[in-house]
Amino acid sequence: MLSHLCAATPALYILWIAMAQVAGQEDREKTTALKDLLSKIDLDELMKKDEPPFTFPKTLEEFEYAFNEYGQLRHIKTGESFVFNAREDLHRWNQKRYEALGEIITQFVYELLEKKCNLTKAILPVDATEDEPTSFIYLSPDALSNPSKLLVLIQGSGVVRAGQWARRLIINQDLDSGTQIPFINRAMEEGYGVMVLNPNENYLEVTKPARSSPLPSPTEQSDEPAEKRERKDEKEGKKKREFYEKYRNPQKETETEQIPIRENGSSEEHVLYVWDHFVSKAAAKNVFIVAHSYGGLSFVELMNQREMQVKSKVCAVALTDSAHNIWLQETSKGTQDWMQQHCCNWVSSPEPLDTPLDPMLPDCPRVSAGTERHELTSWMSFTSIFRFFGEVLEAKEGEEAEETSNTVTTRSSSLKNKHQDL
Image (cartoon, rainbow, N blue to C red; front, side, top):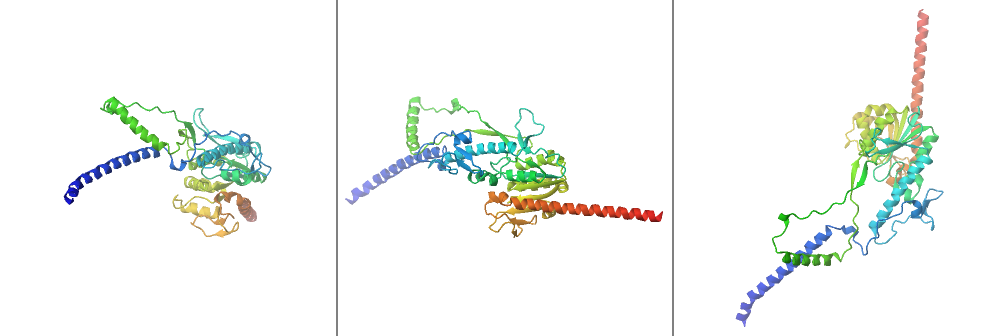
């Protein structure tokens, strides 16, 4: 019996190896099919049911939302605030719906800037041809002619456009906290000209033409007989379909390409371009700047490029949770010293509003914005910023008056001495 068992052992071993190879081959085929599947879909987008089409309303009215008297976005039937998860288990669809609403909000804010704030568009580049992509900024009627004061507003990075601090705040809180309109109105009441920059409008997005699949070249085709190749393809296709049926096949998004706007292809380029073509040519003796988040970085980059011009024209800068870094941006000692005297950064902090905070870098004083939410720092420091501007301007005018008085006294004394000599 033992001899029979020993004789059978090699056969069993061979059989086991063969079965393992078959199983391994099947596993490899399954793995290949699964990899092929995963290369076509995003695992985060796998859901239990198919997505509805990415077709959304084009107006607030069609969305059934409107802003009430307090500037809050509310459903026109239920009175409820905006609900992100309109459909459960459809995160991508909900996100696309939110983005569609955001585009409507952008146009709504533009309308407010033009109709409520009486601002007008200035096209960029200023010498743009008819067939090139363009951007724009907003100007008050006296932005270039006001001889005294000019306020320049620069938002952070992302989807926000001219007139916005944070889309999230506009949708979920109110217009005052999320837009720059309170800053614009207050500035105009206090006699400032106003420029509203648009640092995130950097390119024109166009749809890519559909690409046709190239036919295989003769050299790429297999030497196998056509009948055998068809049976093989059918077998592989059946296995792939079995795996695909376990998952949802997400909708394909439209492929687009971006055409940069000349000399405005980034926030830094935009701020520099607006300085060269608008701010530096404005009549105002005193320029004031409010820059939020990445806008602060863009301002510091402007100082790197136009240090002497900025020092001679800018009176004060209010930064709100600025993203600048004087070391990484390699600012000069002169820039750092100037920022110490003319800038203040209101940062997110649990401390009460205007509480002085330890400096992170030797650039400008840091104080609390009275909130730990980054996007709220501009709105929460609104009153403090205008008080800061007023104090800086008052001090500057006092120094100028004293210098004028000293000059007059010196001249008078000189003339008196000359008269006595005669």
